[in-house]
Picture: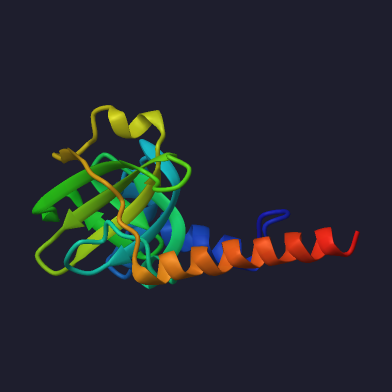
Length: 170
């Protein structure tokens, strides 16, 4: 046994270093043959999947997947989602400014044969440059759903109420 690594590490090394037919090819692929490339870019994202226009705020984005979007030379990943660039049928990068604070952002819509993925992205410089897959770029406006409008009205009303009661108590 190797000093400091324990029995599991030693048996793992023995399994990987074997060259006979009984070796698990998946482990050999991962440890030897597969190029362990680094992401070209990674950033935090909110992501949903579904057809149609996701260029609006609302409940689908409230419950969206939060994670790290990683772009590699041949695929993009977000959590357990992996999309090979060869599987992409259409990619659209929509540029917008948020309705209230005018903060720039992007929505990357990636359509495959089975799903359409939507990634909400910050307005970083990376997305203005060349991407490792073909993409159509459009300027758009982010629409607000009825739920988003109501939530903002309730929040503003509550803030005004608290300010009013605070002023009256002075």
